[in-house]
Length: 225
Image (cartoon, rainbow, N blue to C red):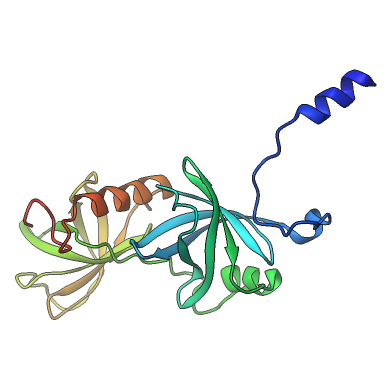
């Protein structure tokens, strides 16, 4: 019995979503949620992966994790932001405290049940990024308007495309391996491409981080693209 008590007492606590001091009914307030979300801060937009959530806060993975004291906005679906402050951070993981108490059932419903957002991956607008689209034996250079795990929206003045039609294309995003895709729409120099194989959370979050580091102070790529 003494050995068991010693082992239990020496076990280090595992960081979790922010829970107020004195709150002992954590298991009734904390909901496990392995969900990709958008995280906005003064440094721009990126992805995070929410591991658990409570009325008072959440724990998430991010590359890199924001700093303690940073103000962030968490979006589980497009258009719905929940303001929070980072209260702890370690390598690739952090905990945020909501500025206002949230309803966990409402947030779960928002993340998984909204008919308007059920099939749309969260889109991130990178500070500065470019891609090359290959179609019909031609290559066209374009800027990335926004990107998600399932597709990308691009714009280029020389991006001359026929009327919208689902056709096979290849897109080469700077910093990522070439990907096969389907051209879903095109109009006035802009186009939307759906990836044949979705990007992983790790691949896209690391790319967003690398892209933000390569952008200069004026938001332009150091390479001048």
